[in-house]
Length: 124
Image (cartoon, rainbow, N blue to C red; front, side):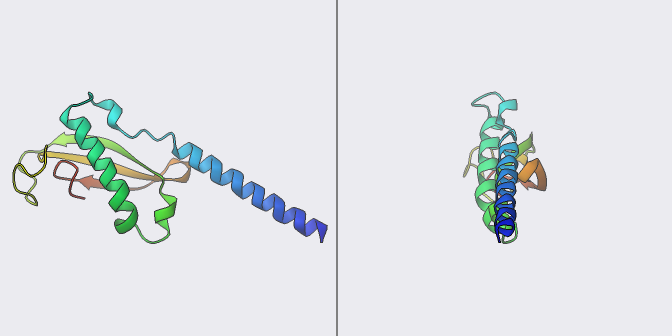
């Protein structure tokens, strides 16, 4: 009985250490805004795209249990594409001509999915 209890405690401890290490490695994902000048349109679009991917992507676009396993999103690219946004009328959001590429990471910085966020980071 004691050996069985020790085995369970060891398994629980190993699982806890593994989860903490996974989350710690994921915390080192670059959010992507640092590559742009603060206050620039690219910087603002990167922040908006990252937030929308975090909030919508976790709940809607990724299946069930993955919601809890996706702790971080990074912006890999922001580019200017005039005229691509037809979902919103001109002037409804700032920087509608920008598109961002975001990547969702899970434990141990494993990339799960890449999203193209259009219309200045407002349309996923």
